[in-house]
Image (cartoon, rainbow, N blue to C red; front, top):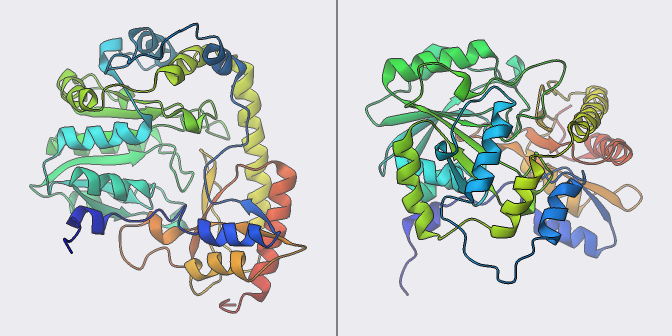
Length: 399
């Protein structure tokens, strides 16, 4: 029998989704599962988004431009300007989700075997995107004890080789909820300029920062017009994860023009969803104020309840709607599976994402989980109660 490709065999499974069969089995037993494993908000998608799709007025669902609709790209210029990000519509390439934006960018800037430096823990699918693009992720480790702040600059410099093409961050961060400060962004700018590297910034969660913190974009950095690339998506902004509309934004026109060739090969991004996303730019500011306050309340309650659990370490996230928690367990993979297959409280249990899949360095994150606070407050309270009870009786507990 012919063998599969090396790419296929090295493509990692998603730690966010790999326990789905166990969740399905629990549900088949009649158990309710509280999903804390995936960043699927329960917030309603704005009405203007839906109305644009429902009233599209088209008789044929035709192909759109490979770069995305010009009208949408021009609308995004207005949106970014409201965040003091000044670009032209020609600096924007619409993609099929933020995932495609990252893959296209990696394929545009790096050759097979080149390296991208990324602070870990990082969004787990970066591992898969790197495999698809044929590049190698080189991790620099941030620690839970320091609330996942940017590691010392020297630890980044030590990782730079003649194969290094870029440093990539997620800001605000998935999975940690950390928000990089302006000082940290300026330090990354310095490294990029010193070493002639691209600086890639996944900024999908810019709307979600707490406690008065202000998000600093890579496109706020002066002197990086040829090196800064922002990666974006509507998935979380409008609670529209299924829309699959993202974009690449950079003032380096060569990157846009080259990535467009990959876009031509996949023809075009989704048509109806672009209409929704374009209308979504006009979402009332009150919508975002209410959503932000809802997430802040959820964060505060969840962190408080986690801190009441003996042996649990959980930094207070500054943005997004995730956190990494260290649990008093021998193996978070086994614990997450055990919660689904062997544990319940009144026929209810919880699903979390083992954090080892958010690291690239082997052995890290073995006692950590990522938790997404995307459920309403009452469900979160119930889920935290179940988690606390599970930790008390888990056979592999360490305290």
